[in-house]
Length: 333
Image (cartoon, rainbow, N blue to C red; front, top):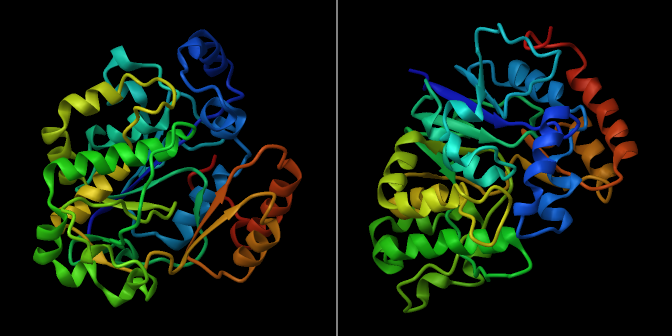
């Protein structure tokens, strides 16, 4: 019997007038003012969203429902009456005292509260596209999220909200789990040959420390169990509510990785290769690689990381997307 699986995707359009007014009104609260935290690279909209919907309709027709999450804005071409589309506003699942938010991290942390969300769901950023036929088993096997539990050293960095956030996530996991006991409970999942031989270069499991040093991450669509979010919120409610207050990215953030790592530590995942059929490229510096990947369908999923001044590159990328996803989907008016 097929699993019931939903998709969740976050979207923002920095050209929206109301969004710009709110951003200007609250910008003084930002504790980090670098481009990575509050610049255009964080909020830019490049007209790629139609390909996201076309990809899921063509290559993952089995998805039950798509939860499209924004602060209330939506592209005028979007068919809000589509039977599989659930248009979700931040205010629908996040307490109003924390809004508006210009930080995706607390939004991610609360997505399990979306009404009607299935137990199994896949979380997407809007720069992650499905470009080839993708079965349910790519995301879930034996009822569990497919993932790769590979340890690596994570360092906190006061100049990087992302690295600090990941370090915060790992710190909370280490409060509740003992690394050595966790590995003993699920050795086959932690030492799977599906991860490749790199995991054996730095054998963190051999160190006597009871703490996890950190985990390898790959920026791609992430499968989750809603019950994982419910459990983590039960354990870390105070910390997560405090993180909800971070209207802009900060060194105090927690993010979706906390829930991913909890799935690792609790054994609620199915071992899978970290990067197989999951491509990641930086626009501008790797545009030729993006074009080749899309044209030759070298992956099922591709993430195209944004960069400033990449308008011409996006034009070239749209041209190749049109070769595989040129027809409108039923999600478009």
